[in-house]
Each structure stands twice: as C-alpha cells, then as structure tokens.
Figure (cartoon, rainbow, N blue to C red):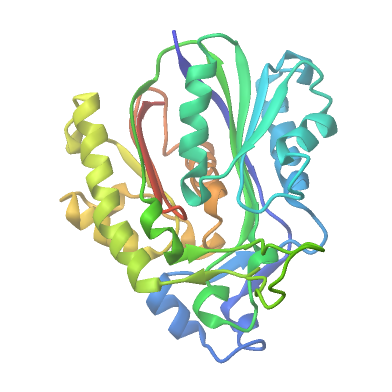
Length: 320
C-alpha cells in the first residue's frame, strides 16, 4: 500500500493583473512579456495571506472527499512565502480548519516544493492513513513592482491534494539539489541585525533577485535529466506517459524541455498564461484544472516535475 491522490483542488485570489496593467507600473508591454514568458495575466492577493489561500484549498479538498477535518493525520504546506517565520503556515491552516488530530509543518523547496512534499507524504503514509499536501504562495509580497525582469513573472495562488494510504500509485521519484548555484535565485534575505551587530550596512534583500540566463540553463538541462532518471526508475518509456505536468515558470522553458525529451509539446500541460509562476502552487493548480476538465483520468501515467530556487529539481512518476 502507498500514496493515492484521492482529491484535487485549487484557489486563486479574485484580483487579476494583466500585462497591460503592469505597463502602468513599469516600462514594459504585453508583447514583451508574452514573447519572453508566455504569461498574459496573474492573480494577486490584496488582503489574503498564504495561510488563507491554503485553508480554502484544504476546505475544498475535505468537501470533495466528504471527509471531516478530524480524520486528517497530517498537513504539509509547501511554500516560500509563509505568513510568518513561526508559526508554520500549515499550523495556521490546521487551526483554521479544525484538524485537531493532524500534525502540520511547512517545507521550502521553492518551486519544487510540491514534489518534495508529495515525496514526504508518501513516506508518512506507511504509518498514517490520510493527509493534505498543499502548495501555497503569495509571491507578490516578495516582488519589486518596479523591476520588470522579475515582477512580470510571479502570481499568487494555492493548490493541493488529499492523499490516502490506498494504492501504491507513486511509482518512482527523483530529487536533486544544487546548493552551489543557489545564489542564482533568491528572495527574502534575512540580514544579521541585532544590538551586537557591528556592521549595520547589510542590505535586507527582500525582493526576488534572479540570474535569468543561469536559471533558464539550469531548467532546460537539469529538468529533462531528472525526468529521464525518474522514467528509468519507473521502467517507463517517455511515450507511455499521458501527460507531463511541469512547474509553470515560463512557456519557453516548457517548450525546450519537450524538445529535449522528443515528446509532443501538447503532452506538456500549460496554464502559465493565466496564472504566471506561482512557485509551489503551480503544479497542484495545473493538476486540479486537468482533473476537473477530465483531461486527466484514473489509470493514466503522469510525470510531475518541479524546479527552481535552491537550486532544486524534483520529479515523480505517478499513476493517477
């Protein structure tokens, strides 16, 4: 027995910010953004925190599964934009939904976070029966809205799954971290600052800073390599996979990865145009959309792959 995804759900803030809206804040254009990223709009939180988005997904999952909160054993939230350093966003969600029997914790593997969280949940389900795995982000807190190289990329949202110890549907996984390249994508730097700090000149680097070319090279080389490894572990051929669900960072990256794998680009589901890069939330949002419109059906072989800050990459082969 092992992990089975029982239900999927997602939630995004109501406010939509189009590329044309961004032209009021910075020197950019719809054509410039679309040609480089494939993004046309993104959802942006105005009052909701990360835990609010995650709690709404949690409640949707419980309703869909006809499950009460007290039947949950654990809650994992993957996020790089938590409400606080402590308490964990997952702990706040646990309190909001009244899951009194569940332990709860966050993980931060940036845009690979949902994949890493699924891997952890799979191990937990050898001892527990049921849990939630949620990717949730309010990345707008970490964006410099005058810096077009990063501001055009990110959006807010949450998605998740209710998992149970049922069928062993997680066939294989591949996780990798490249910490020596971590400076290529950073956000939320916490400077050393106390009454005893001698150097008071350290800059608090709150906002996203990214080596765009470096991250693009990483994604287009390491992600196909990870997918090839996980296919080999699963003993699957690339053509056997019905759908590839990758982190929605950039449309050009997805096209490049499809070509590397010699697969039809139509097999690589996309919603980056509507949501932008929602980091740990992007794969579960995409998964729920495809389940809801019945593109994804039970028994299909799927590859899910995330990549981003760390630098990290994670891929899983799963039978839905």
